[in-house]
Length: 327
Image (cartoon, rainbow, N blue to C red):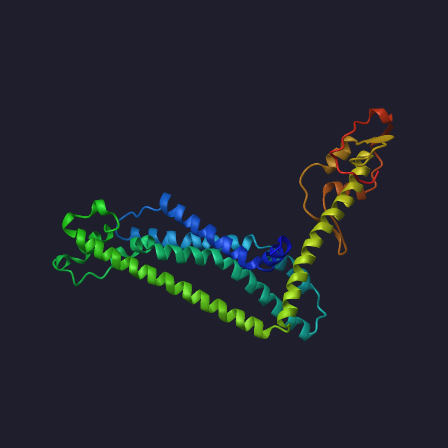
């Protein structure tokens, strides 16, 4: 297989590779987190809170991060206000729009769930978190050593089982059996979670493919087209923004970065510096035009202050590391 074929194959499996990398990073992070941070308090009521916190809170954080770092999340929210402001829409176009929104939300959610589901599955397979959280609720009625103990004393003793150094020697065998039972329950729950997610993913994929108006090869072509369009758009947007910014910078300083023959330069006034300094948000001028920065707004105002001075060509430092722009 040639390098080009390998790159094309990896690009076609971009989503699968991305999800696999996220899952592996989550597994590694969970192992480090468990080794350095997890320490069961071995106290009634505290065990449950601590164990559930270590199970659920990181999963929730990973879910939120999955939504935040997905470009489609912000693309969907950013465009929704403008779309709903358009009143003249046919019923069919609105239906297609809502279908598209549901499809995008499903795609975003599916990617965002990879890390938290992986975290939950790995922590359940590990068993330590579940054993800590559920130790005081373990079923031990069949052990004679617990028959003469009150409910509170039994709960207090069971809560200490995750900490071997706190358990009396006469409870050692019972402790090992109870912890094995809890780890068994945790690992079975982990495998059931993995199986459930796999089945749901397969069913959703089948339904999505059945409802797709595109054939298999047409869908592959569409995926390839969207990826190439996004790549080319980013390249064109980067080049376009550089050229556009170059014009405004030339207006402010009197020359463009990288210019070879500079005969004059502009000296900005104090008001000019004050105008372009500071923080600025996107300023909407009208429905069709925006100011992207303070310098951009300054350049559109046709400032008359500031002065232009002539210079000798020999005074211009030659720096070939600057990007060449229009002179």
